[in-house]
Figure 1 (tube, rainbow, N blue to C red):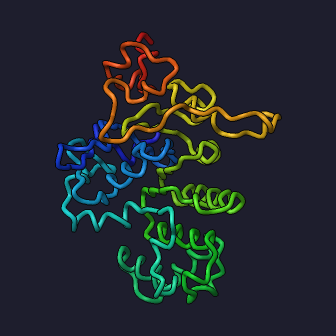
Figure 2 (cartoon, rainbow, N blue to C red):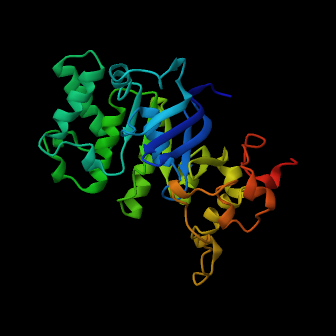
Figure 3 (tube, rainbow, N blue to C red):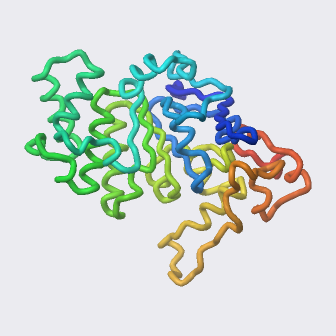
Length: 319
């Protein structure tokens, strides 16, 4: 088995407020192996993007990491000061955001932005940086002749390709892709995901892919982590989780995903009852218990930990 490039241990992120604190991430632990794509999936509010922000050091105040450890290869990064974390961000860890316009300066050409990013992290001159930037554009399927174009002159899919080129420009070890295809149509989404996977394989980079779409998870990832209310519900190889989901929440997410293979287009999709709880109204015990068809007395009073390194559910307490 390949060695982890990222190790997260017992991560807890809180947001203080006048009545106490809101726990956004509660005791999450996982690894990302070198060269793999790990998917984070769950409904809005599950804690997917917050986990990514914690890893890259972008939690907005007053939120902060209360406890836990984040290791990038052999270096602990959650205790670094802002200057040291800035040097790692974009160099060893890059991020692809949901909306590429939040990552691109509308007043500067994409070429200038690529060159600036490259020279910020790599000790190379102007000519070499420009050659590398143009090669990066070509690698993501953009004609280098558009080096001097502005972001508004590109379509949404093309802008996302530019952002991927930016993320890869400093040759990072880990890329966090936060809903990178949500604003794109289905055909462009497939192209961008295929491009991201190919480029990461060629560059040897690892990826955390954050999404709410089980179809994206199935097509793109090697392993998947299902998050619910700031905790890890289930984690494992993508094929195993999709074919034999164990947590009732994982089963619900998969059952609510449309499939052309089912044949009957008039079949109503499964719907998980209820909604994700607010951070200030998390139930005792298992956070999913108010929505769970398999709820037991124990689920209401006791919160399960990850069992057999796979699933947080009392249904599997006896193995």
